[in-house]
Image 1 (cartoon, rainbow over the protein chains, first blue to last red):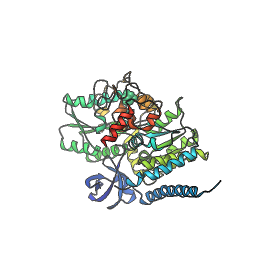
Image 2: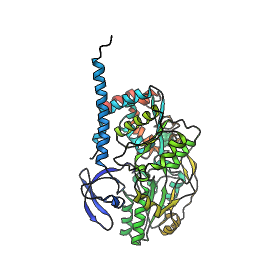
Image 3: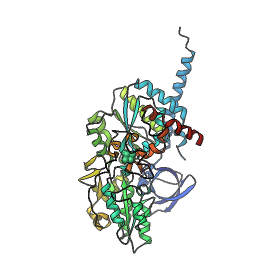
Image 4: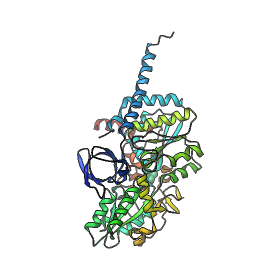
Length: 90
Length: 388
Ligand code: SF4
């Protein structure tokens, strides 16, 4: 219930009641997108769905930034390790 | 699925963990993950085994099923047993024991209890059965409260009279504050519940940093999210900072979701106090329907006993919820209390610490390290390896 699940908006089915179709791992279901109406939600957008409601738009830019940071940190560590291995201190 | 696999890279996890070890310099640190969703990820993915041994993840009260006191379950069952009622609930609540059985038992006795995925499904049932009273058992923190709110607004707009809500929404900030104020509090930092933050934003957490001097990192739910959040917490401690940081920026906006907050504000108001299992009565910690919505309020519409019931003697859920003991330290864990025959709530919900530990954590090295195994771990690990 609290975990939520990412899905992609396919199209609107009932504009007035803010109901759109969303696809989650190949399964299509109606979800309420009213709470994201202010953010200009539309087909193709990825959203996080909780108990039938799209609660947040997945921000691709932020996701990429986080991943970049994570992998850079990984690389920095690898570089450090490589340098360490080349060390010849006696 | 978007951004799921990317956040599960084992190599990156190990590198982060080395950084955590370097920054924390072996100093024992207790970091509370407030949210049950995090607890679930931690056990499912064996994160305690990846983290350096000096980092102790303490499980917090952020499981809405777990904190609901027994008396409220009895009230729910009392409503479900009324004639002509279809009582709807999330699946998690079905097995939670009240003082005289669970909703599942009531269903076996003939009560019409059905589980729904969404409150909108409950509203649909009300449409389909105009001759019945459909009640929705609303539980959850700020993550799910907006869905109840929007459903209520729709029921109001469509004038659906045979629908009502038994409101048990609780709020995470008063819960965290209760833990911070409790005398056995020995925590060094917090991982904030990402999906609550998605609704309420970052600002409500500033008091933890400002008044209590503890770092808070709002965290996502994939394994790397959690490990990175621990890294960010340890980095703050190392640099002598305490701030609210947002690791989960792909979902959490600093201001939260204003539309969700608005819907909650239009339909719900604070209760003067509410009982939390294990934490006792906490002021202004829960929501009820506004008086204008009385006709959709199950507590007005139906007679509820409203009697406070003490937890069973054997149950140590309160201590688990405050992070005072680990699940396997409860005397009945894995013996009298299992997911099939739960005594306490923490064993029922998949976000409960006891259930998460029972399902995944028994094979964990961290548990072996603490030397408090409930079952023979070597044997269990062997079966696990064979089975996989
Ligand atoms: S093992 Fe059962 S009774 Fe003990 S704390 Fe966990 S849920 Fe509660």
